[in-house]
Length: 125
Image (cartoon, rainbow, N blue to C red):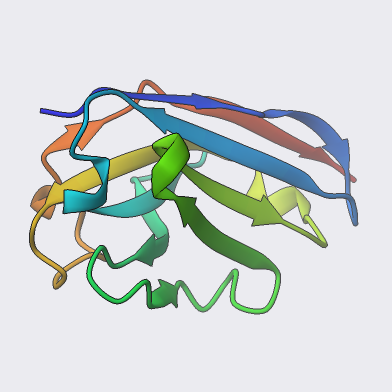
């Protein structure tokens, strides 16, 4: 299983930007479709974005569409989440996740094989 480690979280004012990174271990990073999820305080884990291993196509939650961008660099075993126009409602712990070989069902957390420990993003108003 790939091991994942997120970085790049922090405190930012509303309207600001952050870029999260998720570094994966191992030599088969390109075999995984990757997703970003978040868990706001007191709420369930939510899908944010995903990128398919085979085509590189992306999908987003409606709440972040047009503001967030997911990208991957297989040479660096890293997936990114660029977050622009941040809002206080984006405050959450952000997790990256990996799903081996399969490109569907990427909005469902239960379909992922590996998870990082998360990074805190706090957006002040």
